[in-house]
Amino acid sequence: MITTSRAQVGSIVSLVADASLAVLSERVHRGSLANARRALDETRAAEAQAQAILREFSALGRASSLAVSG
Image 1: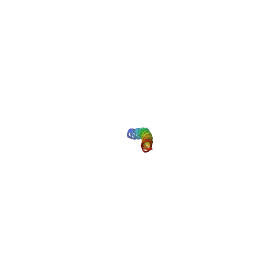
Image 2: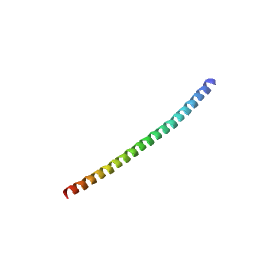
Image 3: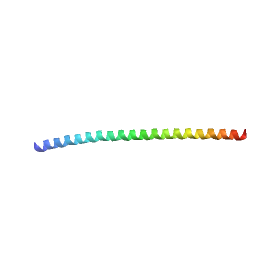
Image 4: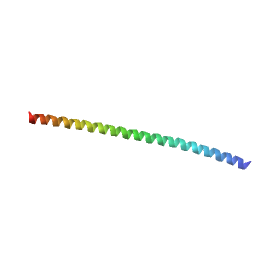
């Protein structure tokens, strides 16, 4: 009888440990996804800013070439 109850307690402890690990893994995974999304958003914002700067330089180049040729 004692070995049966120990086996049951061991099974319960194992199930609780598995459930705890699953919950923690899900949190870590969600955190990783959030970090990845944040990094993508930051990259997109930096790319948009770089494109805007390139457009400004391009417009300045066209304006100065018009002034020189005009």
